Image 1 (cartoon, rainbow, N blue to C red):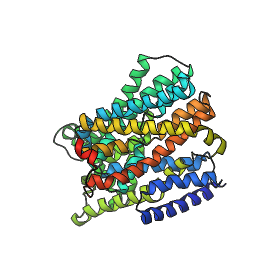
Image 2: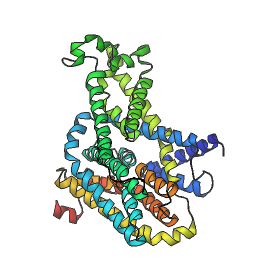
Image 3: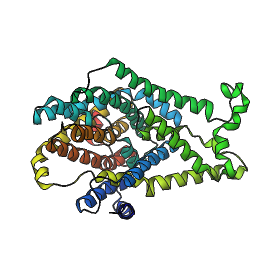
Length: 426
């Protein structure tokens, strides 16, 4: 099928999914995932994305994460980092143990069990943040807690991938040097982000390099956005987003993390130039354009494409259904309880935030598929039954994110009283 035909089908499904979401008051992400699943099983979309669709999908998730970071408050983000270590630690450890134990029981193979546990460590934060945005909660304390803990989780998961994959495949052994390199590269990324935010982007400062070398103020972010009287402001911040996404990628992090950090460090004051009446308008117009691109027509391609990973095969599905249901239930319970308890008792979040964080940490995407590709396609460690068990589990974990967030929102916002069991424990 021609790439443009696939794109037309995906956009048509996005349009229909958005209409259904508005009618049913559910998040569009749920329908985007379902659309991809339905179309791949009808044969309308291929099981493996073409480079064109895969490329747009990657751009889509970068735009989504940049748009979410663009709306977030950097001060809240930094403060939340201190509260989120426990969520990242226990929110990754518990599902790892649950998946490892289930896999060891099902298949009795240590390598398979190790890699199954690894697929369940990192949260698909982009899915959660979009689901929260659809409920108007993307700027909430829970959303910030999820995002910050997911970044810590992502770094730790990358370290685990580098450590465990060579061991499981027999290609290498545990290396202190290898671990040190991974951690150092992650730290270097965040150090560079701080340097960019403090010394490169600002156009005025009372201390630091800008105070010492005033000529540098001519190259601040405001000067980039002011090109052609601000008509290229959207292009300018997208260029920054892509550049920092590439920096994250080169240092071993997912580009989406870089895009979120890029949005986080761009301030409204950088748009304040020219006539007074135009300052706020330029910022609002730029945000509107970014949101439209990210959430209406490019970003949704990522979720539709994600849904195409579940190709239905009746015989295999029937044979692994019991294992998939047990694994799904085990990871679901382990993830929600561990992340919620950690948020409550190590992060001092209130009960409503804690439960929302537990639900928000359920999604699995990028890292899980990387691990499965290595274990199934490249090295043949996973059997077809293991692969489909994980695919079914991941798909329904992803579906559970918008569903559970939608379920908890009335309790979170106080529209409904907390269930009795939560009132007792609160």
